Length: 367
Image 1 (tube, rainbow, N blue to C red):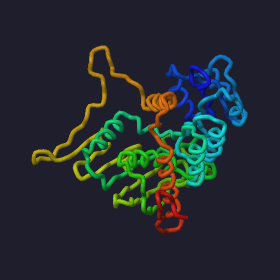
Image 2: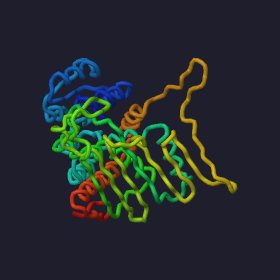
Image 3: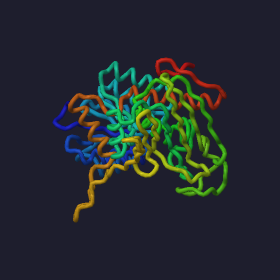
């Protein structure tokens, strides 16, 4: 690396940068944020003042930031339609890249990101922070130890009853590529495939709906949405069959008339046991001729004067990402894994549009 500390540039200083990336990086002694870029100058200036080193640079054009050879790492926190363009340019400029989810707006763009990372030898990871939750980490270890056996049926759940994000470009299909499927469905699918360690889809069938997004003055967590600007789906569902016969059902919605909501969750059914995140983490199985259900204690509190606070999932994500660079190890979220997630999401959109199944070969969607 160019300095004793990794020098980081932030591209996109909006909600996700302020809510996750910059606060988490600020807690790491191994890094310093030295450059900030945003198309709105005030946002870059504010971020630099709050999180940057003294004299941190600010930019309106990400290309100018990438010209700084002293920057080691770039975090891409922009709308989906610019993820690939900026990531590819950053990798080619010799930077390691953490790109926010989803990996890209299209599978072709995501493939280019993987190819460029391979060509340049720089590390690339995608911001799937749900992998770093305490319950996710515990369940992943249980899966790797074979406690569930062969996982042959799973459900990826990302359902909101009424929580449509009304700010930024979330409702803009051109900039985002889609609605809840590509926004929160991507988290649930990534979590599920990671637990299964299964990245070889065979075919996918999908449906998308525009049933509630044109309603005026609708009830919503963040206030009514503007129907004229709501150009993405309000719900999307997918049925995915893997090459080994395993089934994955994907549910995603920002607005659905259901009380069975919850997001960033997975349900797993294996030959030796099962697991779900419907009421905390629950693992079920059979032992000594009896069925059992266990709920691991994932908090660390319970002691007087100690509330058990530890690093958040976002902080753990940032730390392990930076450690992968410093130690030259693989990041937790591999770009090849994120690419398969993107391929499946695009296949669901394609299937919904055509009314036909979409097939894959070697994890890649057949056009």
